Length: 209
Length: 103
Image (tube, rainbow over all chains, first blue to last red):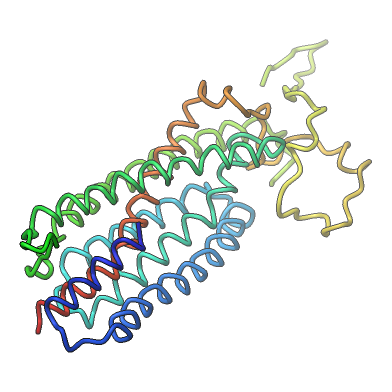
């Protein structure tokens, strides 16, 4: 998916700005790939360590990390449909990377909490089907919206010269999805908190943890 | 929690769900033991009463499909990673589009 879009953008570059070198285009794109990687790493560190502190020291639900992640994603989608100056696009990639890392850092722990550790690897493997399905859905959405704003050239190429408007609608959709994500995460916190509370009431009065 | 009145003494008893499942009571970040320092005997004595510990029987395989938690976790993971993947896969495209636009 990434590969095809990269090729597509290179084609665009060539048709719109023939003076731009292949190397320049690739470097522009790689800056964003690096930003996503670095912030994803940072997010994984924060949620991995943070969620254990949250649960062990503060005795809060681990699902608060999910609320954090979906809030970060909401900010990223807002950046996605409002940034029209490419010099500020680093905000979109870094915030997206942070949210993505934050999500993946905490999720295996959520699965372990929910279904136990003895079947964790199978359960987590099962769970990773979800990104495949939903990733495809959202990529197809982006592609459809992009194509709708593109013109078909006689050479067979599809090009879009509308800048932000080429894909703005897809970020509006993902913004709504991210807000739905916050609501879902809060519902999960509520479910989990009532379980923690029920569990706490079962603990003999002498124990404080 | 049941309140039993035996010979005038009020006593609280606690339902301990299957105390044999010690691996579920073991935490990833233990307060009172260091990594590699877990005493099996001590672990066995611990009651599964830690507030945030998993306390239900382990679920795996197709049994997952019968739990509400699975659908919630699966949908949440899909929704959020889907959003993230859309940006990750297409940001390179976004960059070149807007560069073109400003030229």
